[in-house]
Length: 247
Length: 230
Image 1 (tube, rainbow over the protein chains, first blue to last red):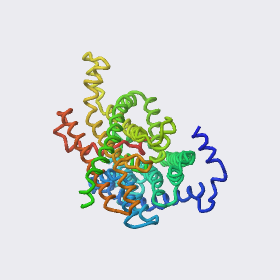
Image 2: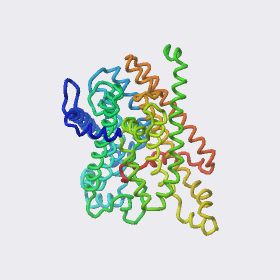
Image 3: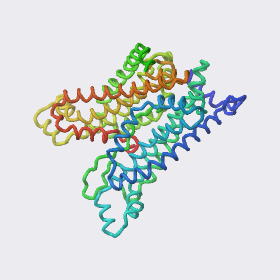
Image 4: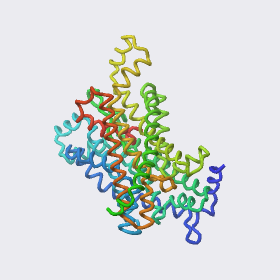
């Protein structure tokens, strides 16, 4: 069984260390996580302020949706190829692409999270004398936290999946096992690499799901947008993201 | 431009190959998702199970799934069927949510009226619920179509020809034009599919024509709440 061979390949301690410039699992895993982390931090620095601005003011929503639709259509692998040719070797082109494709889900999570909040709640806060900043930080952010984290979760998963592709351009990631294995017809290694990336994605997803659950403020029922005062159903927010290239 | 003119044959062949991978995946995704989405809209248990499985499958990175599908099914890795199945899995993972939303958007009063008028469950599904769910289903399949076409390019990394072959080739030869051409073709193909799907939607749902502005909004909103809802 190929899959069992792959699992014993992963469990073999010899494959965890780097030998003779042949990166081991540890090195590839750390590289993968590092690129993911840097990309996600940059994404958050861009998408959170912009998303909160759109959600709070209601301005620019159309532009954000249109931009997200265009990004969805762009093949990540193609953009990576082009930028690696034009800019050259190094993590730079990869980061650029990951940030580009990581922004829409978090952005959508941020503005949709704010939009899903009952207007009456916000008006009440305003009537109580909250300033706009206080409304944002004390009312909107806590209530929107689950959806924002949901957006973050999509972003992280997109990036983890896409980082696999940079192996084709000489950057270390877990994709090295898949592409390297394909090149040398070592299918055990190919499957081992796939299992590793999948396990990483599922693990990170599960952790973020727990975080998302923990972020629900006390007294707020989670999901379905059924938190409104008059029991109106609010359309579930568009935090979803499409499959992106690497995904 | 000279490169494009001298390689029109390749452009055509690879575009056809790309269509050959994407269309079966999109169609399969739709056909499988409609009944599953219907089940998810009617039963909490079905909903929980389908959404959980969908999320797990959706979480698997593309390149990994492309390699795991042939291992799971025991077919050669270079068989294009692998790409079709992998793409269909993602399509289903997204589309089941859309379909569940679509059927949930059918007013309960309308459904009960149909039952009261003597429609059997099957008649009610085909004549009442499916048509009324149509606009949201259309929005879902448009998202699936665009994503599938973009995603099909990674088949080239495993050695399955598609428009993605332009990317691998461009990188090997350090020839940016070819990568640009590939990206443009993917975008054009996605746009063409979107126009076709919209046209089919208008043909099948003429009552929906007036609200095209609304349709655009729905297509943005009906993106499955992949992250938010689970």
